[in-house]
Image (cartoon, helix red, strand yellow):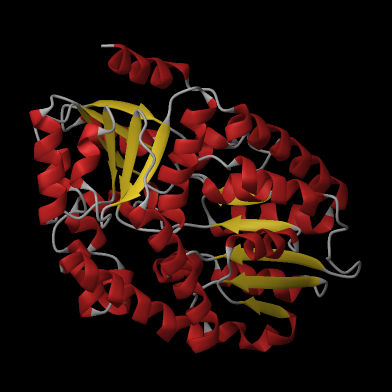
Length: 396
């Protein structure tokens, strides 16, 4: 019942944020995926169990399952609300739990897995497993309904993480890996990667002429959730200076975002785009000449984010200016395949260089593309230590 109420809360939130037409399409899309996954799960070797159907579930379960299948490890995905969830304990050898609330059905599945002495792995790409961090965010305090907050009364999946039976974790970044290691777990970093089907969409988009007008340089910021308002706020003054200095700059603001009233002066040069499905999302990003990836600094919840904004822009040959934190610093080679910034002056300097120099945008975008293609796609996935760990379990 709790899981059902959380999903109802999320559906109402989407409708409230995106409107009946746009929001209704998203809810129906989620419902379609939910119904496909809830009834039929093919047996195999590794089962990902996820609590959602959004982008986190896409990257951390569906895309990871595809990656394992490409490396001859049979993997499937099930929603935690699957009607036959408990019976799946007999059909797989390794069970990876991603953002699952500890419901009665999840508890039954875990007990059945333990009875059969099979492997349980905890998976996370965020700090949601520790309630203190999510409850401190502006999203939780000001944007969530009471139904949505039910999901975060405790850390998402913390019961699994703290279970002594569970010896191994998967996560998306070095930052999170260090935190998970404090729980005395073995930790593998499995980077977020672009699936083969989305890569095919992207390759077709790259054949098109970029839609940027010759007279404009389009600077894009793409917000995934309402939690990014304070991240965007860290560079608002920088963007005001950029818009004031360069009349040829247009600003693309996409997704759920509260826009600072100080930007109203430039509204004729601001393009607002609603939250979009994945295919439309890639087309929207492709309109940009520069992508920005700001985050609040010295905020553990923000520091836990992956380098997703770097590789989603890079695969479209678009240069990124990102906050200088551990994750982006590991992903980006400064001045070669992207830029890093840690102060307003650095943000202005790096954005200005890219606005003024079309060839620099092209060069950095091309180098980012080559790095992303090699390190952030399932087509070229390489994580042999992790694959071998799974194979050793499967062979026993």
